[in-house]
Amino acid sequence: MANQQVQSEQKKALIIGISDYTDPNLPQLDFCKDDGRDMLKVLDSIGYNIFDKNKSIGRTKMENLRKAINSFFKTAKNQ
Image (cartoon, rainbow, N blue to C red; front, side):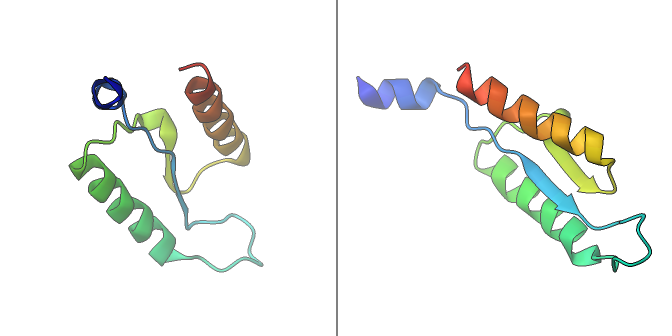
């Protein structure tokens, strides 16, 4: 019975791979963008359901990143 419940649950993930910064004092970290894309591919291949709103790869505004994190955990808590 417990096994059936686990199979019916969706696997979800929040992918953050920020590499491009607007602050000139912070170096660009291209490998973070690549790592984020690679992790997305791996998790997708093993059945994770990753919505666009749960991906922040490359450049993003801090406000959008906060919204993505809050939304992800709020949704996870309610399920």
